[in-house]
Length: 112
Image (cartoon, rainbow, N blue to C red; front, side):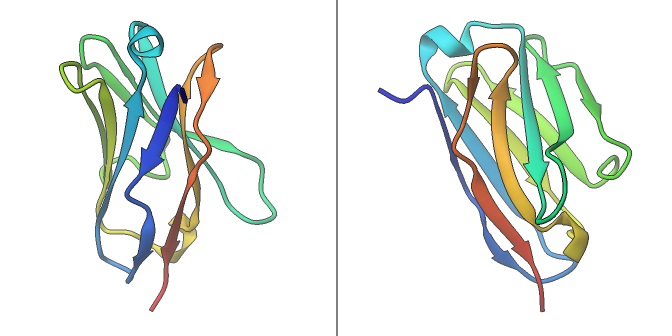
């Protein structure tokens, strides 16, 4: 029984959009914070966005205004809506519950 499962990655052209989903087990989802991280080739894993149980959000400067993190507590799912994608957004995106669990990642490639 996995605790966090990401989906929704893929290949998209610059300027396009993707929505990532992270389905959590109930025990993991019963926590305050859920976050998205990403890791591009040759770079350290970086924090992208975080949302708390009430829906309050914060974003890395590099994605602010383009990405939206949200959660559906009934579905036990956190989302990352990514708009106006740039080639530099290419990375493996990971769902994270701080101090509890990481997902296995989903690849996002932004290229023409």
